[in-house]
Amino acid sequence: MPAPLLWLGAACLGLYATNKANNAYLKHNEYVSLLPGESTKRVAPRNGAIVTCGIYGVLDHTGIWVNGNIYELSGAGLIRCISPRRFLENRSGESIFVACDDDYRPLAAEAVAQRCIDNLYHTRDYHVLSNNCHQFVLEMLSGEKQRITSFSELNEAIASMFMSPVSWHQAKIQTY
Image (cartoon, rainbow, N blue to C red; front, side, top):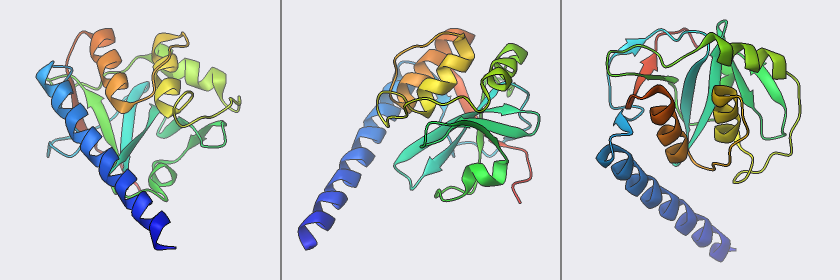
């Protein structure tokens, strides 16, 4: 039984190293100014804002802020509306971060919020690489299906759409 645990550990270490390289790439190419956890500034999200939280320090989960809740694509493939507390449940982070421009304004649009509302309770064939939360968020932002798999690709797309580097700041919300 020790071999599977070693493989799991090696896989986590590989993901961690990949994330560090991706973060350096995002900053070097000016897609991101501040990554989640690098800022002490707290920002109130607006409807249609992109939010994220960490998953055990290795992955990121994303969703869209709408009327005090978060729309997400669950691992079962259901587009659902959940509380900020539920968004953090069974994940490692205690904070939700909101994508902002360099002037602390959330990158958001009411049309994005409306697309989320229109898609509530729809289902998709969820796949961790080919149809995940990041792809859902990008589709809600753009109104079109686009193929992305990672948080890095989502950051690139957000920076391009809003023509601004992304600065992730802790959301100024109650999570209890």
